[in-house]
Structures are given as structure tokens and as C-alpha cells.
Length: 264
Image (cartoon, rainbow, N blue to C red; front, side, top):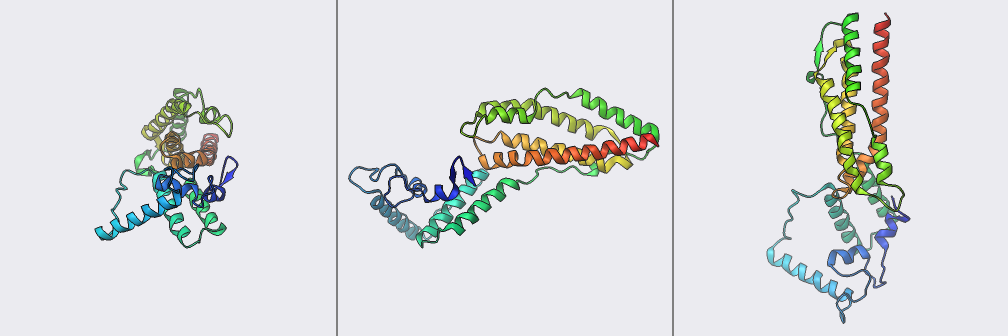
């Protein structure tokens, strides 16, 4: 994992003020990673040791650490809490090495790449008809063309993402609002495809496209969380191209099947 020119290892091991306390740990205790003495006259190392002792005493008096409400945490919040608690625990016994850093990097990468699908359509959601003759296939094909014309695309998600990240140093989250009309278009197509009559022989291929569009719609929604839940947003961005390829493949499969039936 690389953030600009820094790897996760660089970030974890950074000690900007050289006081022996890593920057990420200083942020946990409220001290400045830029100064050895956040409070003049008191070394940060001393202040942090006093805070640790205070926390330990409070935990002992209460019988257990105060439980934290995680109900409203974002996915990024949860990962950050897990990351910092893991590093904090490991750093106490000197176990933060390159292997650990690599494992943490892999864990973050997996969370980004494998965001779960929120909704999956089933065959039972479609209006499947038993009639598979030439006319029913022709009607089906005509309806798909009407749906396509009904929802013309003015901008694409990739157009917006190019404006969002013009270069690797800067992003403009304001442009992400331009994803709303694109997603409204995608949802409109999904709704129309679920409501139309589908010949039984084409139902599975039709369903593949509906679910492909649903994955893209969820990606578009999640990209907009960049400011509030960056892991979800990065997951959506990383999945978008692969999901677009899957949708293109599903579209080709359905088009081939329709053409074959109409040519018989």
C-alpha cells in the first residue's frame, strides 16, 4: 500500500519530532508529533506515560475498560480502531516489524477489494413468461432498445473520477455530486428491466445484467463516501472497472443469445 510516496511501513514508523514516540501513537494520546514538548516543560514521553498510568488505574477501579459504542462507526472507523489498537499492543513488546506491516497492508487491501454486495436480484424478482417464440423474443429485444433510448448517458463515472482525481496529489470531492444523475439513470434501467416481460430462455442472462447494473449502482453510491468512509469509497473505485467488465460480458452474452434466436 502506498499513499503518495509513503508506504504503510513509512507511516507506521514515522517519528517526526524524534522523541521516540511514533506519530500515530502521539495522535492517540493527544500530543503533537511535531514537538517533543506539546506542553512546555513536559516531555511528551513523560506526559504519555502519565496518561497510560491514569488509564490503567481507571480500568482497575472500574473492573474493566469502558466499552465503546461501535454501532455508528463507519468501516474506516472500525478498521482504524483495529489498526491502531493492534499496533499499540504489538509496539509494547517490540513486535512491529516488516512482516506485521505487510500483514496489516494486506488486511487493508482485502477490505478495500472485497466490499460486500448489498442487494442481489433473484429470478423470482423478474416477470418471466413461458412464451419463447420468435415474436416474444422480438418484443423483448424491442423493449430493451426502448429502455436504452429512455436512459441516454451524458457523462460516465470515469469522466467524473477523472475530474475527481486530476492528479495523484489532489482530489476534488465536490465533483462527486455529479454521480447522482448517473446513478439515477442506472437505477432507472434496473427498474425497467425488472418490470419488463422476460422470455424464460433468456431469464438467467437477463438477470446477470440486472445484477451487474446493481453492482455498479452500489459502487457509484459508495464512491460518494470518500469524505466520510474512505475505505468504502476506495473499495468502490477499485471494484468499478472489474464490475464494468462483468456487465459488458453479460451484455454480450445476452445480445448473442437474442441474435441467435432471431436468426433461427
